Image (cartoon, chains in turn brown, purple):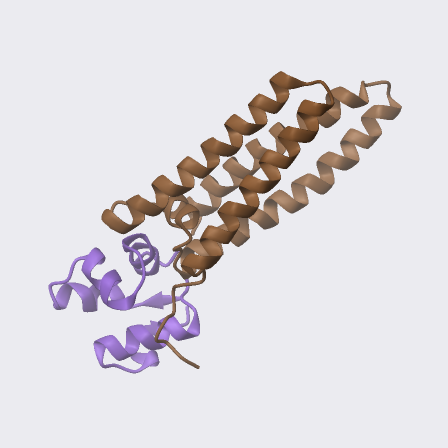
Length: 143
Length: 63
C-alpha cells in the first residue's frame, strides 16, 4: 500500500483524452443530426459540447490557481479530485443510475397509456441531467 | 466514526486548508472529516496518523 499519491485519480493525459472524446462525440452527434435535417438541434449540440469543454477548462484552471476556493465539482471537472470528491461523484452516479432505471420504466409504461414516445425520449436527457445535478448537490452536502 | 482531527489540528495552529495541503486533500475534505460526515480511506487515515505522529486508534474511534 502506498500513500504517496492518495488523491490523484486522473492524470493530465486522461483529462485531455476525456475532453477530446467528449468533443468527438458531440461533434459527431451534431454532424449526424445536422445531416438528418435538424440544423438548429445540431447547433445546440455543438454549443452545449463547447460549453462543457469551456467549463471543464475553467475548472482545471481554477483548481490550479485557487485550489482553496475550488469546490468538489470544480476539482472533478478539472480531473483533480481527492478521495472525498470521488466518493461524492460515485454516490451521485449511483443515485442517477437508480433513478434512470425507474424513469425508463415509467416512460415505457407511459407509452402504453398513449403518451407520445418522441416527447418522452426527448425529455429524458433533461430529466436525467436535473437528477444528476440534484443528486450531486445533496450527496456533496451530506458527505 | 469519531476522530480527533479538529483538536489535533487546532493544537498545532493549522487551518483546514493548510492541513489539507499537508495531507494532499481539499479543505472541504478536512472539514468533512472533522465533522464526521466523511470517513477516510485507509491510506488517508494512515497519512493523517503519520502526520500527527500518532496511531490510528489514538485519532479514530468507533462510535
